[in-house]
Each structure stands twice: as C-alpha cells, then as structure tokens.
Image (cartoon, rainbow, N blue to C red; front, side):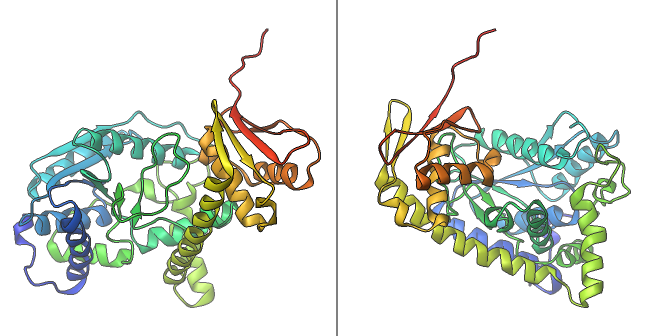
Length: 373
C-alpha cells in the first residue's frame, strides 16, 4: 500500500497514530525543519504504523526520511524478513532505505539487553552518516504505551531504583562519552511519537491501512529465541504471560497506570537530578584527570541528592552508567558521611574513589595501572 493512499482525514486508530506523529513533526519543524529522520522499522505493527504515518505526513515537509531495519541474525529466517521489511518501506514511499546486519547474540540472561545495545549503536552509527544526532538527525522509534508498561515492570523486577523504573522518554538525549549529565530535552536524538498510544491502536491502524505487518515469533515465550537456561526471554514472558495474568487478577488493565507512573517518576527524577547537578557543579573540580568533590556543605543534603552527586562524579571520571550499582554508591556515601577510612573504593570503568585524609574531599579517578605478573 502506498503512503499516499493513507486517509487524508484522520479517523479511528489510524487517525490517532497520525495525530501522535504529526505533533512531533510540527515540533521539529519549528527547530529543525530540514532534519533527517531515521525511522526504525522491524516490520511489526508498532514500527510499521510509525513508518507509514511518517511517510504520509512528511511528504509535504522538508524532512529527509530514511527507513532503517535491523537484522539481529537470531533466526535463519531473519535475513529474509529484513528484506521483506525493506520492500514494504519501498512501497510506502521511502527512497532511502538501510538494512543493518548484526551478528547473532549469544544466548544468556542478558541477551535482550545485549541485542538492544547493539541495535541502538547500529542505529546511531547509521544516523551519524547524515549529520549530528539531536540537531541534524533524529531517530524515531515505535515504542507504545504497552512497551512502557513492560519496561516499568522489568525495572521493578531488577530492583534498581527510580532510574530503572521511570521507563522510556518521549525525547531522549544521546550523551557523548564522558558527559555525566543528560536530562530529557526537546532537541534530543531519539523520538518516540507513539509512547502514549496502546499497541491495539498500531495493530488496528495497520489493518485499517492494509499494511502486512510481521508477527515475529521471537516475541513469544515459546518462540525460537530462548535464554540460556531454556526459559523465555523476560519481556516476552511478561508481555504474554505476566501482564495478562495481572490484568485477569486485578480485573483492570494495568498498562495505562504503569505508563503514568513512569511519567510521574521522570518528572521527580529530573527535579532531583537538576538539584544534584547544581551541587556537583558547585563542589567539584577536575584536577589532572581527577574529579575532586568537596563534601563539607554537601553532607547536609539528603542521601538522594548526595548519591546522585557521587554518581555524577563517577560518570565524569569514566565509570559506565549501566554498571553503577546501589551498593557501590552506598559505600561511597558511607566513606563521605562517616569519614572512616580513605578508600579506595572500586567503581566500574576502572574508576576508584578515595577520601583525602583529614579533609572532606572525595577524589574520583581512573586507575589505569596494570598489575604485574
């Protein structure tokens, strides 16, 4: 089905999808009217509805549209499926289409995370071909409210705090290496126009427009892709087993409330992060690769602020955000507040934290000394 055949007057689920995408395009037109938009499309109903709406609505604007699909190589049929997606994008009117092929990720408990990281890195690499991400190029993703609800629950299962359960953001900043800050911003690298819509809308929109979306068996608990222990991948199990069971038990769809919780947490998290950033900028200084934080005044602040400052200092020194754990920040906090011992405390990315004896200063630096032997 050609993009031009999409209904001119929004109606039904297709209209809701179009209006959601149109709101983002109008916002971009005000600040980045000639931007390149990379539309990631797996061929599933969410991303396909997004790709169709983008093609229809951007045709009268000055954006450069690029359709992108990623072949993870998980299944022997995935290469054929990726080529089918490219053909669908071509029929939708995309003149610029990229097929990104990744090596198959090994089975394991972290398989989903590894695949997601590889996919995002591949998308960003392709985006940089067209310009600077977040100003000249934007990456559009088809995540829906259902995805948001799943992300919140997966974060709760990990038990890793508000930063983990605040879910995905409609606008997401790509943080350059070595930059510790990075709150949501209107001119961000990743855009999720469908984040407020349920998956039922994207499925219905594809049916309304006659789009042949792909129902990937990898997304099912009994599908061909399993964890190393033989259990289903967590998101697939949660989507098809956990959430339906929760809805049946509570007799109410939990997805809208979970997505709303994510939004509220994002607002609280941004407020705390902004306050912590002010304290970090006020008390820290960088001396020959060492981030020095004078904690004397900072110690009067609540633990939620202090630990965010330790996190900023560790990230600025080179720690990996994905590897920083609560127990590590708790240990740094004890070193600062109890003022017992001087460290060092080992942090991710070969970063160590130590306290200058007899002072209130914490030092964060990378320890690149290689052991002999």
